[in-house]
Amino acid sequence: MAIEVFNRYERKYRINDATYHKLRERLSEYMEADAHSRDGEFYTICNIYYDTPDNELIRRSIEKPVYKEKLRLRGYGVVAPEDKVFLEIKKKYKRLVNKRRTKLKLAEAYAFVESGEIPKQKPYMNAQVLRELQYFLKRMNMELRPALFLSYDRVAMFGKDNKEFRITFDRNITTRRYDLGLHYGIYGDKLLTEDEWIMEVKIENAMPLWMTKILSEFQIYPASFSKYGTEYTRYMLGLEEKESEEDEAAITDEGLQ
Image (tube, rainbow, N blue to C red; front, side, top):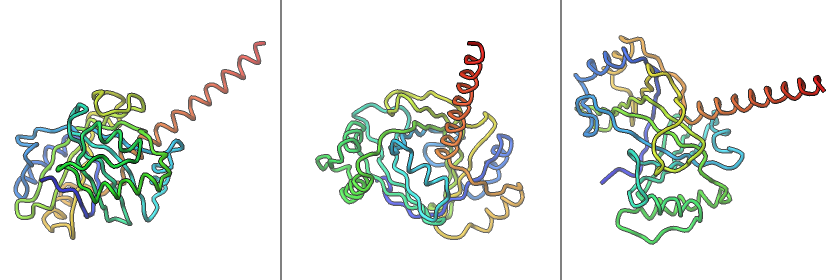
């Protein structure tokens, strides 16, 4: 059964392709790839992030408050309406991340977020998490709507001696603000260059000493990075540039009249 409640610390790092390959080889002494990442293979994660019409959740998040939260719908690869996905709330208090999620069929998840009505209970659903999701939707005045599609290719590893210690490597981060459904497919704008990876270290307690030594050996340092936050910042800059260009064009047109 997939884990539906997480409490852990996450540290993020930006690395290039050359460092990724060297690091993977070094980590193989202590870690192994999960079932979806054997032989260096990646799997694709697709998300829909929900927000208010004025982007309240992501605006609050990038201000780096002590507490923040996000609602997202997650599938693996392209999914159809009858395929199962995860609807989840991700909360962060200081550095501790709490994630609560439940399985739903894609069509059920769409309907639930839109209506706020809990679907008829099925064996694959987590009733408690559904109630928490419903409360969250109502607390947000039922204003949440699909705001962003975001996908990436992931390679994941876990510790040989501690299965709870995980490292993920994400690349090919793709985003769009149209066709906001997991069933449409994977396409859009690239968030990073082809040479860049986002590495996340996920731990329940302290970082293993051997991992600390490896990070020092490769001179890899923490980097604050949010996929959704980075996209939103870029999106807003694009809107500002477009408005500036339109203002300049209007001034030019007035001068020619």
